[in-house]
Length: 138
Image 1 (tube, helix red, strand yellow):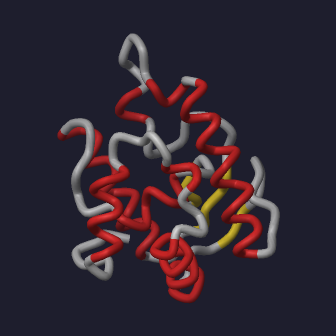
Image 2 (image 1 turned 60 degrees about the horizontal axis):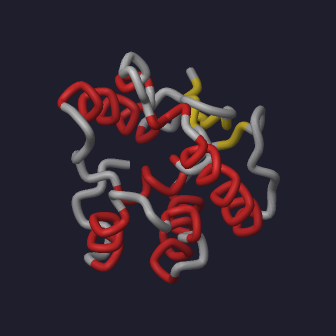
């Protein structure tokens, strides 16, 4: 199977420690983290992805909003530069240990953090990164 991810979730998953918008969101994210940990490939999608699923029933889900799409564009650009491959809808790849280490190193130094500006989770993500990514689930 393949995990469908939007571009900015490539950054979010680096610091995911089991916190989220709701119990359903966390349960879904935990299941996705396990799938990624088992080596399932990632397929980049445009718009809401597998992580967004529990929130799509909300009247005004931010997953479909302009701010999320803007984060996707910035993350795709920065992650694409880092990994030397296009990060766009339809791209598929593995998040192996070396790729995750590279992504985390860049995240820690701010190289890939432009997409995080203004995000309500930025403080938590900064704390997780500063703590050496202890307790991350992916």
